[in-house]
Amino acid sequence: MESRPLPEDKVDNYRFRLGQFELVPIMIGGMGVDISTTELALAAARLGGVGHISDAMVQHVSDRKFDTHFTKAKSEKHRRTRDGFDKTTVKFDLEHLRQAQLNHVRDTMERKRGPGAVFINVMEKLTMGAPGDTLKARLAGALDGGIDGITLSAGLHTGSLRLMEDHPRFRDVKIGPIVSSLRALKIFLKSGARLDRLPDYVVVEGPLAGGHLGFGEDWRQYDLRDIVAEIIAFLREEKLDIPVIPAGGIFTGTDAVSYLRTGAAALQLATRFTVTEECGLPARVKQEYYRATEADIVVSGVSPTGYPIRLLTYSPCFTSNVKPQCEAFGYLLSREGTCAYLDAYEKTPVDAKGRKLVPREKVCLCYHFAKFNCYTCGHYVYRLKDTTRRLPDGSYQVLTTEHVFRDYQFSTGQRVALPEAAQPAPAALADV
Ligand SMILES: Cc1cc2nc3c(=O)[nH]c(=O)nc-3n(C[C@H](O)[C@H](O)[C@H](O)COP(=O)(O)O)c2cc1C
Image (cartoon, rainbow, N blue to C red; front, side, top):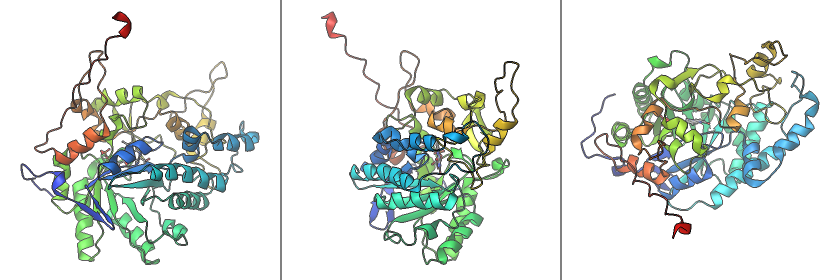
């Protein structure tokens, strides 16, 4: 579906009505592990849009933020399996998990100001040794903590609504799946129909997005515009009033407007916010995102989830032989206690000194996401350097969320606003 935006049409000319909310149609996507921080989400809400926190590795996030000790307690409890490959007994304490989620969500919601909303991104592929039970605990923690909305990602979520149906907030919280095809949406709608619970919105994520992709190795053959057009046409035909939110590769306000003009209700954006002050990536990693060129991006099969993931080729996770960290983490363990990294590590030979070589097929996503060693990014990450200024020391100026948000909201004609030049640090008083 092609649409040429009017020269002065801008995102701010549109509003996204979602229940009691009247929103600027800008949603910052969930980025785990704590890359889309509370601060990032709160900034979006303050500016009238939607921000997401993520519940990926939420016990670890709670420990970092609130000085809890869930990870240590789990690691201690399962210390006997640390040196082996049988992880069938490694399970999460469901009450700890719910509590960690509650800590994260409640803290965020208590600090929320302004007309916008804060949602949480909940991934089905975090199977955590007991898929249904752990997902239920995470959903309960989010609902108890007062989250405005739940975005169901990384999976078809055919059973997720049922896991929430007894919660008093089930019919009032906003719920929307992320899909990459009409087929996936139809499957989700069927599960909702059984409970008389339609989604409040649907995010349609195309092949240029960051994080895991809902496509196979043939991702290049798909176009977000086609998928969005097909889904909008289907919903119109079925007379289903569900707002559609495209995501993946929407880099400018003008890109965003082109979707709004053809029936999208809002946009989900992420990559441009990875280089903001509020984003959880460490400062040195933000510079790694800025310096990326198109040749540095790979869609890789190294994720144990089985989904392809877009990464920068110089991500440290690619050259690591770290021992599987299932006792402390174990967020990707199947019900049977297996994980593709565990298998790859077991099969990897040792060198002459008895040290493990680097497993080539898979990476330990838990460990490396916790350390910000997987530089996952959207396809247009290599354009980030054009959105800022170069500083005298050669590094790139980090932006504010407000700057990027407002650029999407108000820019026209494919322009990207550069930030105000950073002020040089004041001369040292000792010199006076
Ligand atoms: C650093 C990063 C981490 C991400 N992590 C997640 C995640 O944990 N769960 C998820 O559903 N999507 C994740 N995404 C996808 C975004 O939420 C979003 O839908 C997508 O990246 C939008 O495309 P854009 O980055 O081109 O704007 C991530 C994206 C990035 C850039």
